[in-house]
Length: 577
Image 1 (cartoon, rainbow, N blue to C red):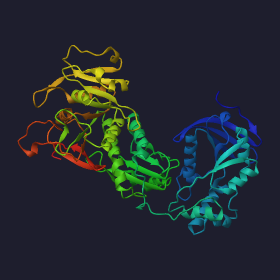
Image 2: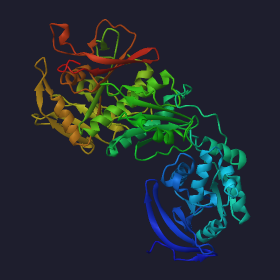
Image 3: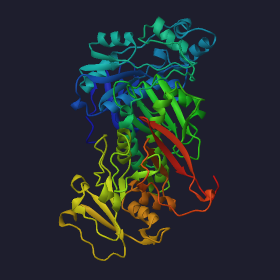
Image 4: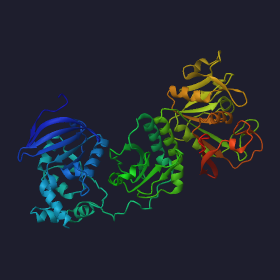
């Protein structure tokens, strides 16, 4: 093949074949080498183009372990070390794993099984090897020097905990610029094995007393900014990737850098580089059924916790106490879950191939959203304003009615947080909006105006025609016989135009229309400790003659710097929930 180097021989390492190797850890090339001295077969797993390697190169020297690498044995740490090394090199974009035919530290597969039998009787790994007449470690690394020479690698960053391996490689002239530790958390089966490695073979492993999974010790940084970037990643991944069987979400990081997000399934062990904290969101409620799988996931971090969905409230995630390595403080989890729950609800809508709509209003204690003259600034505090900007960042579009667009003249940007500006959507009535007067016109590259289908003559400024998408919507009557655009059709038309998640930011009449149509999945109602006594009401709903005909909600509440945010889910009136 044209992308392969010629078959060569470097010393006693004969290059037999080269091929592509797509894997669950990434796409690599595999080089097959024969040791012409003993006829053993070894391979190098390569990421990147060897002729373009930057020295020093990340390298893992891994001796074959059938039981650990292929069969998932818990008696050793070999399988997990190989997997993590593959992920590390994939993430780095270049590197080498040399896989040596030296089973059982050089004693062979069947002798290793015999050593296992002795270990079952109480001997450690070193004692078992010696009882069989072998030294503790028979491995030879001369072939490694030949392979690295063939690849043109002169200086390496070695992934290992083994000082003997470092000394062995250096004795063959390999320059080791750095050592990268690769420590696996012990389990009930390999704790003695790892202890023996550390005490008798000098491996650089700091073993702590192993604690059971259920330990209430985790205190995670409560600053939302630390994990906000991961929430934005989640939003993008959620929209762009197809569903997986047994889908889990992982948020991971440490106290020194922003967190990251990863979606995975039970068929693939995820990799969490340089992370101390891990939060698993179990969307299928089966993550904790396979404790071996959980152990492999949790072994990579110091603290981990699982949350699962156990409520009709799609954003109501609760801690799975059967399987965790710590507990997040209640206040930190509450604020994070406010936005995480929104993404979980969006994901459900995405998988069902339907639009998602949530709404947000800020009101006084007596249910007013503005004074009689329409003034609403500043009814709520700065924490709520930032919250509104976060909601904008987590949606494709932000939608307002014509009254709000005219009176408040909002920018509809995410200037107070990081993230992409949503696409503004304006619901226009029978009279044309003065688009040139709106602040958002100069701040957004694209806007959508929804207008009555029967409206024939429309005036759009010439400068706005390139950025505004006009979408006709059929009209219907509200409870007061006023002509309004049909809420369900608005959502379907937006969905057909690539808008899958919509944030309805007002005003009160517009929110009321969508509530009556049962189109709002989540409503965030911010209550300020203020009484106006008059002004525009939060909701404009039909007159009812009995309490049971009112709109009833399931509610959660959050403290926003002394003001209250209520998250509301409209209950299904027909089912009687």
